[in-house]
Structures are given as C-alpha cells and as structure tokens.
Image (tube, rainbow, N blue to C red; front, side, top):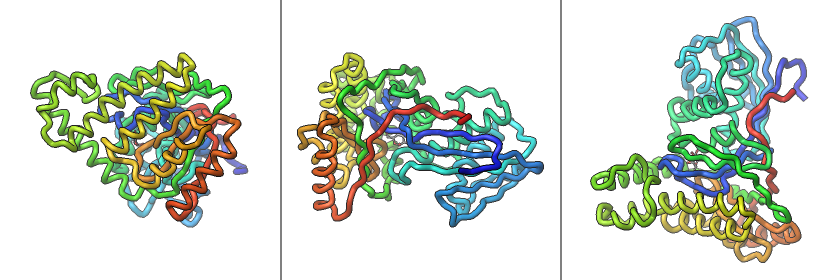
Length: 375
Ligand code: GLA
C-alpha cells in the first residue's frame, strides 16, 4: 500500500487475439486489455519538479527532472516512457503549473510483449488528463502515448498497444481499423474455455531492429504496388488483388511479407465475425493460421514461440493458439477448454522445458478494462 498520495490510476497491459504486425499497414487488429497492469500514485508538489519512482526498479532510485527541461536521457531508463508523455503534451502547448511525485508499480511480466511500456505511457497520460484537467479523450491519450514511444523513446510502433490499453473494456475485444481508427467492441464469450498466456521467458532481444526491418519491407512493398494501384496501405488490398499484382514485387521475401499483411487483415475480419457468431472452433482455426503466416511468411516467431504453440496445437483441449504481439520471444496465447487447463499447462510446460532448456510461465488471462482512476 502506498499511503499519503493524493490519487491513484491504473492502466492494463494487452494481448492481441489476432491481427498481428498490421497496425502499421492500415490493417484491422483485435486486441483486448488484460487485468495485469501498472498502478500509478501521484502527489502534487509546490515546485516544478517531477520525481519518478518505480517499485519494480527500486535499485534505480528516484529519477528527478524539472518540468522546464524534459529531455530523453538513457540513464533515466524506464522513466523515459512517462517523461516522453509529458514532453509530447508540452510540445502540444499544454502547461503544468506544478510538479508531481509519481510512484509506479506494475505486475505485467517485463519485456514479455504484453505492452508494459504502453501501460506506463497511458497511465501517465490518463493521470495528467485528470489531474491537470486537459480535456483529452482516451483516443487522444493513446495517440500521444504512441507519439512518445515513436519520437521520444525511438520505437517505431503502431497504434495497437496504446489504443488497447487506453480503450479496453471488460470482457470485450476491440476490433480496430488502424487506418481510420474506427473501432467496435466485441464481447469475448468463451463459455467453457479460457485464454492462457504462455510466456517464453525469452527477452525480445533483437525485437526492435527486426521490427523496424519488417516495417521497412512493408513500406517498400507498398511503394512497388502503388505503381499500378492507387492505395494508401498494404491492407487496402484483398488477397486476390495482391496476387494479381505479384509481378510488381520480384523479391520473394518481400512478397511474403506483403502476403502476410494482406491475408492477416482478411483473417482478422473473419475472426471478429465468427467470434460474434460464437463459433469458437472457427475462431481457433484462424488463430492457428495466423501463427503459421507469422512463422512462415513474416518470420517473427522463432523456436521458443513455435515450440509453445505447436505443443498447444497437439493438446486435445486447445481450440486455437498463436504468438501475440511483436514476436521474437515474448508471449503466445491459447484458447483452452477449462476441463483441460491443468493438464494443458503440465504437458506444454514439460515439452517447452525439454526442448528449450528453461521453463515457460503460464497465466490465465481475464479481459479487463482500459486506463482509469482508482477511487
Ligand atoms: C508491437 C507494436 C504494435 C504492433 C505489434 C505487432 O506490440 O508495439 O504496434 O505492431 O508489435 O502486431
């Protein structure tokens, strides 16, 4: 318990059910917020100082900066995420008359691809909006948080994570068109099944450079396609249209990248539809196909994720399983019948440890709500 603080805020982490690596190609994504997340306690100060402290990184001590000089500093480590949100708001002309003491505590496994960084950004943005009465919408807060990550921290991510963390709704997934930002809540009704998060415990080492490389390949593919087709994003195309334009992309690997984007967008639209029709079996099948596409065409999985997902596919209680998030380590998810849950975890965890040499972690996910003040 952190006492003597004025107000308390919370922002969740997220999982993505399907629609991977297409939020920067104008595709549809289908994430939901989870109940793990980041809590932020704040207290007003009389001066213009910000004092950041994280209970997860106590060894880093208190990181102190003045509201008048917020710049990226590698030494400030995790605090660059909230600092980035302050910076973006200051750049937009917002004023903060007084400083704050800020204490963060998260229970999202770190570096696991469950958006712990988006969670820190969005909880900061949501808090600033309330404490300084900025009048922003939650979508604005998501966009500002993404900008902080792109321009201040330097990771070229899409909008999915910050949007899911800001806009999540209990027991619902968000079907988000990342081109227009139109969105729709769709209930996640699993009846006798649960979502299991499977953490490879492999830190996403190369993730950022590989991520930017995939993005660049998609941008290049788009440019080539634009020679004959008037489109703004890869996901403006259907699979049939892409196939008819195949001659424009002679690099085979680049074509596979584009094929993933376009086919994943179609799968995501189908998946959101069958989920609404309560056809979990069809939903699971699309999850499996998404993993195969990310493994073979987009090549962002790797032995750890493939081992977990294949072990899950081989279990009779599994309805569907796939990587979630950026890949290259991090987490996979599986929808598993409740009767099989314990056995599933036992079997998949044994198979993983035997193949990889260290254990995976398993958590049963609950779909929670987006960023909010805790009263
Ligand atoms: C990371 C990024 C997101 C998205 C996913 C892949 O989580 O932050 O914007 O691109 O990878 O779907």
